[in-house]
Image 1 (cartoon, helix red, strand yellow):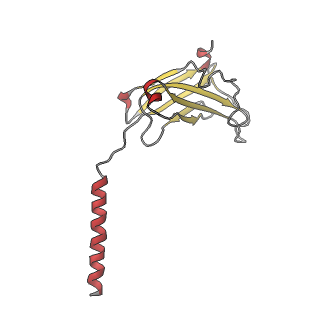
Image 2 (cartoon, rainbow, N blue to C red):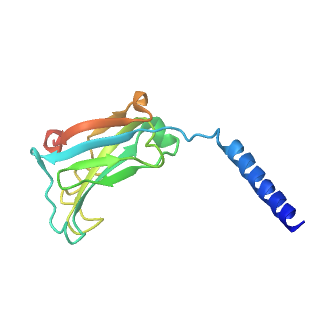
Image 3 (cartoon, helix red, strand yellow):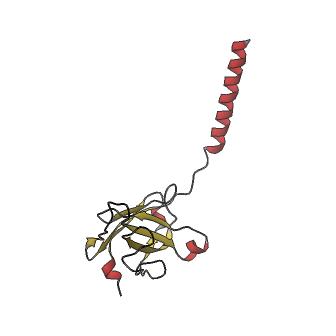
Length: 152
């Protein structure tokens, strides 16, 4: 009797697991796009003092525009590597396709500092990018983006 009650408990637990798995296996989160690129200034990666101390970095942010902004989409960011490359993956499988403003902060004293003096801030950046829906579930490379070409 002791063995058979253990067997029934095991069967009941296994059945619950199968039911839960069956109920959730049809859900798939919406696919987004992973955005990559390289940020340069005059053909070179942005140099940042205090990088080794953890204070200096180059932050790249994609800020939703148009319909994305009105739908409540959140901005997404990454810290560029020393070679200027960045990857913005967002949650899950990437960010929503649509229009974004590309914001860059060259920070030498931690978040809040900006050696670019706000020239590429959320309110002033002239750089707009389109993340195509055709890239959903994959990657979209913005290529090399030289900030000097966007200066006024």
